[in-house]
Length: 118
Image (cartoon, rainbow, N blue to C red; front, top):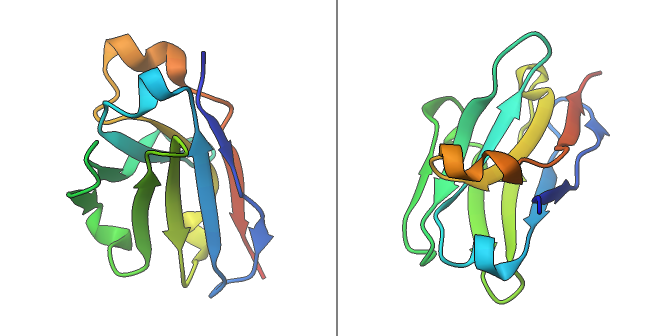
């Protein structure tokens, strides 16, 4: 069982994308969820997280004024709205539990590629 990410694309600087992540309800609904990204040659880094109840969100400082996270527990879907994209946002984006513990390692999906380039 894995999460499935989608919505990645190639866009120009300043563009917007909305990423989605879905998974079975038993590994989605009761858990705080997060978005992570991995740029070429780098480790996977935290981007944003949201509580299971959809009441609390936390976004890394470097993207806080451009990205937002949300979830729809009825659809078992997590979202990442990305605006004013920059070249440094280029990465493969993943979702998983937050924090991604040892127990959630099997849930990593293939990710979705975001490329920001002129």
